[in-house]
Amino acid sequence: MHHYNLSNEEAEHVRNVHERSFVFDGAFPMLGFYKDEQAEIAAFREGGLVGGNATVSSDETDFYGAIKNIRDLRNLIERNPDKLALCTGVEDLIACKKDGRIGMVPFFQNPKPIADRLDDLDTFYELGLRIFQLSYNNQGFIGAGCCERVDPGLSEFGLRVVERCNKLGILLDISHCGPSTSWDALKFSKAPVVASHSGIYELARAFGRNKPDDMLEAVAETGGLVGIPFFPCLVKRNPETHEVLPATVEDVIDHIDYAVKLIGIDHVAIATDMATYGSRTRELTKDSVLRVTRLVHPEVFGVGPTDRGDPYPVGIDSHDKMPNLTAGLIKRGYADVDISKILGGNWMRVFERVWKR
Image (cartoon, rainbow, N blue to C red; front, side, top):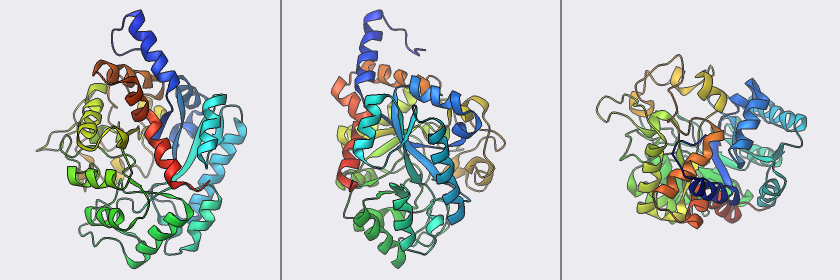
């Protein structure tokens, strides 16, 4: 299991810190839960995860697609009531920690399901939506994604969406947003804003997806956080050619380290952006960004295969290996209380501030 050679005493320390922590995954696809349900659940449980933001809207999801995805998620939970739970409030996640279930928080990566209908936000809120990204990779009614040629920022409708999300208690996310749209969200939101699964641009030059220092500082100023991803093209790449390079858990921790030094321990978290099934098989969904977008936008998603996934960082390439992250942070000299913040305490803090129930 352990990526590091640990003495019994060190292994015990890792176990204690990990078990005490509220380990939360800031973004993951549902692929594994539908392809190999029990193996995916087992990996989450073995990794000590309390829950995560479950993607129920991605590249091609329209209104009906999102309804279906939420229904599929609820059916999955109903099949596994002792292992999974739908979480729409902080107390739901606290209950999951107590009874050993995995809390699924519905997350729209693509705002396409609401199109230009503001009241549909309320509809999806009632169905459990609690985190909402203002654009995916392209131009939408709200704002522009990181693959657009021009990013004009938030539209008039986008400003109303920000306001409505603030009012309802839906957390706003700018991970895939273009620069102007991101800056507008940070300026106009009255509540904390997150970059749920974005890394450090200085360490891996993924345009739009990894954020520059000044934007990370602005995220922290809203009270939000950056969720450091394990998604290979965001972890390590050649700055000139954009070739995605092999990485390890240490490279992920380099991003964490950089962020902690820049914006402080209270504003840094993790987001695997990984299906353990997908990491194992390297299978891509038909609307995967690597299949659809990589050839056109290597500056965003890197240079690499388009028919299969890049290998995830060694030592952290499945959810059951999450304790390796804890071990690595201990080795870097992080205090136990700070490790707990990074592993998920900071997500809980943001949810407590933003969610209304």
